[in-house]
Length: 388
Image 1 (cartoon, rainbow, N blue to C red):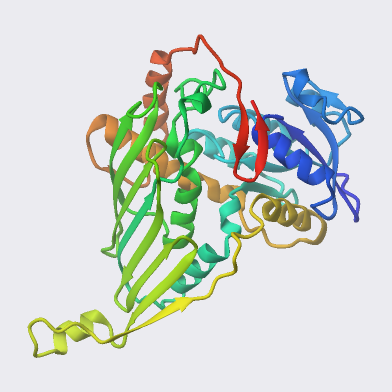
Image 2 (image 1 turned 90 degrees about the vertical axis):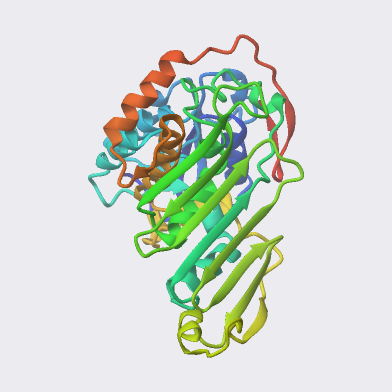
């Protein structure tokens, strides 16, 4: 680790839609203390935007180039594990795009490679920077909702067209991507889910395969989670529903919290509902309540920039990580459990056997079909222009 006290020399491996977004942010000076120092991609045409930077056509050349202190991995999912292990073993700080890996066993292998705790190892879960989710986490974990009884998250604003899925040979295949809406889009929500509520003890899911698109992976999911403390949760997600919605509702003994359209509303019971149920002499009387619209800023946080800033500040100033890579295994475990539950039509109890899911995934990979036609597109994803 040759990091100076003033700047982190960052290399990026994988200069597709997300990699180029990160590169542009750093090159534009939006990440203090971070210098874009080298790029690597197997497709040299993706590197022309930064002609003065050192370019490499494979991860090993970049990792061992001596040009960088830290590596941002923005390659297709399966390679996160091997590239991440190599970078950690080479002494680099590492930031991995979501998901941490495709399956729990690979997450375990990658996390185990992080033996030198002086190396900063983070994951790109940018939605943790959203003030709304930070506030919800505080309210839940500080006990201001009381015992959590029910969670209902409908997140169907991940709409994707067939052109999106046709844009890469690795996309939406078991062999190339390892999953669909859960692993590529809803992994953000599942990271927030476990970050706020912790992991459930069991999962039951229905994952519809190619329900809205010509793909071999899931594009619509409904799942039921059960927690050891008695709470239940329902998650519904899709890339084929339009107009979609993102609505998170949490019911606790002390009230109900709802987030939708960046509006956070709390209806608070004046006394706990469980206590009112025992004490009231009226058959239909509900506890008296008060309502508050919790103020939120008019933005969703700095998102990717926030994680990059935090990553560099952790390297330079030992700032605590907002999104440690070791926590990335939890969303992957939930995804693996949902897919296994659906395919085998059974409730899956956590912790999930990582070897069991790895064997199951290998069977799906064996049946995976390579795409014959790849159509490149150009358009907007969020607030940045992508070219695939």
